[in-house]
Amino acid sequence: MYLPSMYLSVQHAARRLGVSTHTIRRWTASGFLPCTRTAGGHRRIKQEDIEELATLIGGSNHLAARLARERELETLVKTAIAVTSQLDLADLLREVARQMTSLLDCHFCVISDYDRESRTVTVLADYDDLGNRRPDSWIYNVNQFPMAKRALEEHETVVVNVSDPRADPAEVAIMRRDGDKCLLVLPMVHRGQAIGLLEVLDHSRERRFTRQEMRLATAIAGQAAVALHNAHVFAQLRRSDQDVLDLRRAVEAVSAAHGALHARSSPADLLHETATLAADALHALSCVASWGDESAGASGAAASASRAIETKPAHVLVASAPCRDRPLTLTLTLAGASTEGRSELLTLIATIAAGALDCLLARREADSA
Image (cartoon, rainbow, N blue to C red; front, side, top):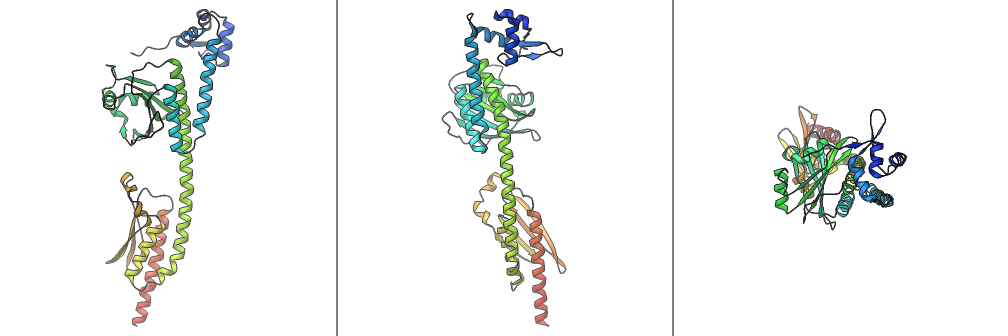
């Protein structure tokens, strides 16, 4: 059952800890003791933080508490450096999983993306505590799992123990299937929006995580959210650079093939040459060129990597250009979504091919006359 946090005033906190109100204010100002403020600007401290600090002080002095907080801060700094220095997505996921399993002494870490529009969660990686990646490409709707939905929509950390009768039956069923005893679900929040989940699993015991463990885990989830966002932006920029390079090479290939198209001696040969040019220049699986009753097809270089179509839906582009009384049409099949410029370049190839075919037909007419 959820219980709301109790907040104490500076005076009550000072009496509980046996220190002066000035010390409490100094600790909150330095960040040593977290606090929030009322609308009137008065400090309020969570009772849980006070109790934890009282335990650490132990009635002697606050040196133990300060050392504990300093170790916590050192852990966060080291983790932040390790995580935020990774721009490659695979390296980042591995490092986040390593930090989480090491910090919490757990066995597995699952990292997922969240798409707010489709409300789907996509598992990006699943690592064990030795850094080995387990195969997992699961995609599910958040409505299937109330715990994940709560974490994503309410930005709430959720702990599920397999024997808890109040736990989500769907989550518990999967945990029992995989032999997990405890699941910690943390939302990765970037700029106020949940962008994914960190799920840490203990295979051998049910857990009640300490407040320090929860603070550290939540902080690492926040760092991971920023790093994951940056990695996605970096990957997108890198893809954009590659797309520009591919488009430039495609334009060069089309320019170089202009003469070859005009050298064809029959419409069938010209259509086959056009289909081959389009498939290779645009890295497609295949292309079919048709004009009237004639057509020709060709496989592109991407056909040898056709396994990509098993995980990505094929995408079809169609372009045409007029030639005499009918259009010359190119139908291109891509292994994934089309990138910017491909449709326009396919139209250019169709236009060049239509011009070459018109010249071929004109030569034939002149020869027969």
